[in-house]
Image 1: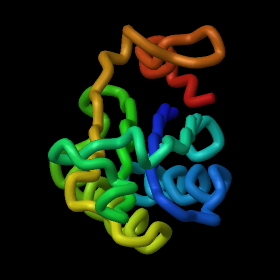
Image 2: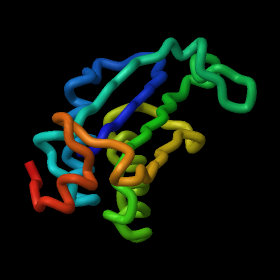
Image 3: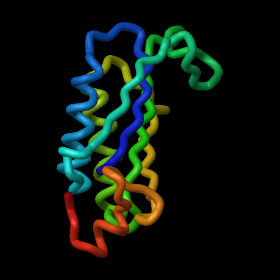
Length: 133
């Protein structure tokens, strides 16, 4: 697991949701040690006229902005892992999209292992039983 939710506002882009999903899945694997096969990525492109930084639309400032949120199981990553993910995500998104605003955000949310899961099993269950599938 993880689950990633991504919103992107860019005045002009040819970047596909598939490309963003592949990039973020790879970063979750490489920087956080997550299993890519069960990483879920929800990508939404937003009208840049409806995304504001400092009360100005990114269309007006001709910038791209994004919000990447990733939910991970609590206590599975160190502060250094998380910092590396934030840095790499900003750098890689800046390579994909033009003129990325510094007020583009990456949020890692730790979720208790007994509070989420997939395939009908919590992460806590997987830990206790040794079931990594």
